[in-house]
Length: 94
Image 1 (cartoon, rainbow, N blue to C red):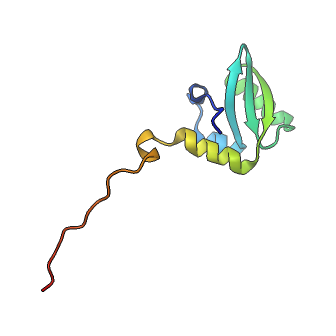
Image 2: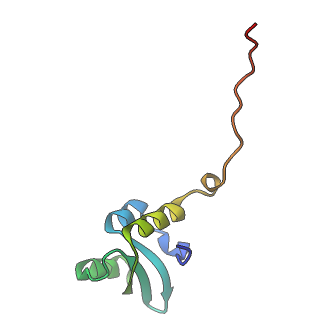
Image 3: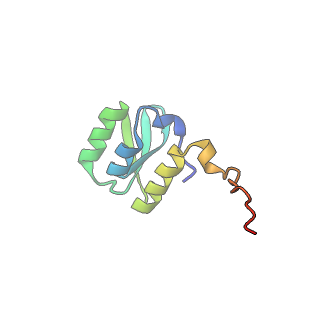
């Protein structure tokens, strides 16, 4: 999910997002578009309005897509690309 504005993640833990199956996508004016597995969950929308201090515009995605986006957003840059392989020392066995 490349629509996620990572600046909206400050102050929010990956565990909170995963537990609630949500990802903040983008914010315009005082409205935050929140990608949710259950956009009809009014209690969650109210809680999110308190957490983010703005109106929430729910959008829908599957739980698997949301979890993948959370992993992608919180993955460190060095973990995103493979590092050098570790070589084992060479030992002659003869």
